[in-house]
Amino acid sequence: MKLISLFTKKSSSLTVAARALYTTIVNQSREPGFFTIWGIPDTPNGRFEVLALHFFLVMHRMRGDKNCVKLARSLSEQAVLDLDQNLREMGVGDLSVGRKVKSLTEGLYGRLSVYADGMAREDGSLGEELRRNLFSEGEAENSVVQAAELYLRRERNSLLAWGTTDLLAGRVSFGKGPVA
Image 1 (cartoon, helix red, strand yellow):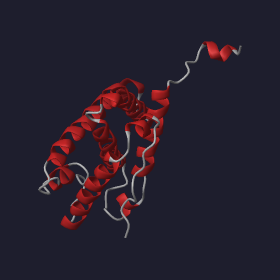
Image 2 (cartoon, one colour; image 1 turned 30 degrees about the vertical axis):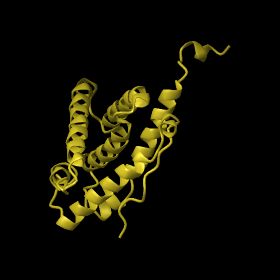
Image 3 (cartoon, helix red, strand yellow; image 1 turned 90 degrees about the vertical axis):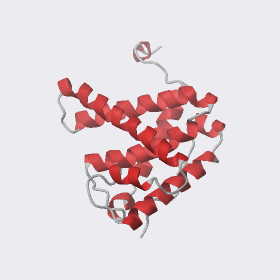
Image 4 (spheres, one colour; image 1 turned 45 degrees about the horizontal axis):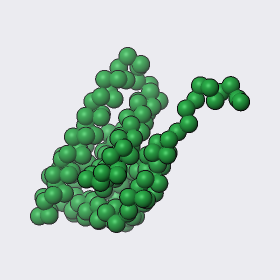
């Protein structure tokens, strides 16, 4: 027996699945079109907003699925761990990391709620929520906000087709991000 095995815990299948889902979310959030075509600033705040949008999509898919409750919790934990790690890499001091993670986490969950409310309306009124959050650092043209709303609704519908078994195995994918 290796000594290291005494001090490490084997990851559960839910943790492995949550990491895979989170990796997919992060990879989609890094698609250049969100920044070059939609004009979202390629800043920590802009990247957070794109990440929050994709995090919402996966969490929204799991909402109401009793088989995904623990997976959703584990995915949330992955997001918090990633926020913490990124703040530390950006040089935020140890004493203030906790406060900043709390603030970002509250912002993340606030967006989940706001986007869910907007998704419940099929009248195209999600644009205000997107303008306030996703495009908060600049003026977005109406056509860009409409494209973002179409993207969000398209991806939501696509994720609804993914089965619980796929989610529990950490398998989902997104369609193409913004293209010229």
